[in-house]
Amino acid sequence: MAARKSSGKRKYGKAASKRVESAMRRRKKGTLKSGRSGRTVKSRKQAIAIGLSEARKKGAKVPRKRGSKSRSH
Image 1 (cartoon, rainbow, N blue to C red):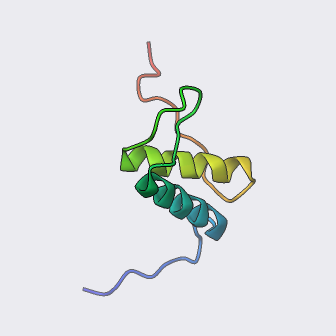
Image 2 (image 1 turned 90 degrees about the vertical axis):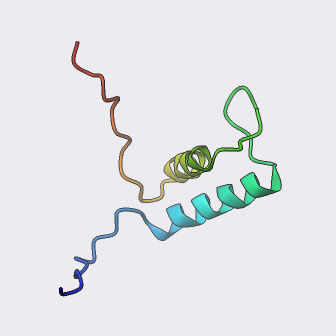
């Protein structure tokens, strides 16, 4: 089986991965806080989401957010 060739099109920019990396480190240190509540983040998934959100705000290359799955009424 041949190895898959990448098309060279990155979904996420380097700046985005740096933000996520930073958020993960802050989570490990225990200084990563979530939105309005300001609670300490313990979840890995939530840390990634916060990192991507910060990257988005700074204008890094991050794909748009997906809509909720239960859209149809």
